[in-house]
Image 1 (cartoon, rainbow, N blue to C red):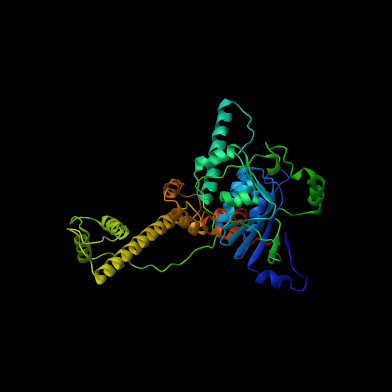
Image 2: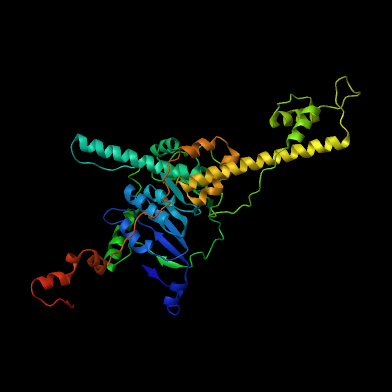
Length: 410
């Protein structure tokens, strides 16, 4: 449902807009909540460069939430998620689809295991149980992909039903930042409310409004009633998502064979000592206090030789640092290419690997294909296109068969 800024601007403003504000202030799925069908109908076709998704939802159907999140990931627009009030349960799953997640002042987020009801015999119930476990593992993977934790760690956090304040959500890596108090006038594009429709349903919503955000179904009725959430151990402050970055690459600067031989000789090292041993010996030598007199076997360096060694050591450190930086970038780019992490988290993961080398194993454990990297389908086939490939699907075909005029009007 669109609300234009002014009557005078009308269609011109909508056509020129490159941003849309989408409001999800309902439960997710169910008879009276916002469904994935509603979302696809009203949001998937938006021709904008940026979607700002406003969330204030207690959650709902886990599978609907997963579907909506994947619709957002597949959209060409940059997605900014703003948690205006609450993003609980399935709504937190939707939030993870954002290139940037902003917690509103005083907002909350909740994560927990997927749950539902099953009716049937033991085999059918067990099949549904396996489905719930698989869904919860998949959801845990989305939290891990954003925060840098492991799927197992986030599954344990989900099983405890964890509520986060805005500050705690940022600390855990679930969100990038908290909205500033002076962030006003940001909603400037098309205003879209998926599922918003007739006056009948508006009346129904007004009658059901009191129960809309009923939290009694959960173990804790909000953060104020819940214990402090667990913050994953391997976590660095989340960087703001900025899409992709471009960095000039330069070849690594390495020591020449002649330089290495000279340093080995001057430092008294074996002829096969590697660069690490050379740098360690140099650091040890420089740390030693000057001897009052030259001891037997000591090599004295003049000022030029000393300066050359320092320059060579600096070049070696810079070369090694460049090699490590390029390796981290290759690991993260590979994770983006195979769909383990979204492109907007590239800078975050590069910083994570630099701060904690152990995060490399976490990145490697993420499941490929978690973030769609290819088109997942298309829709829209006209009757004429079908008739061209299947003549029997044409109305003219059947009318001609009964002696009626071949051309059908109407």
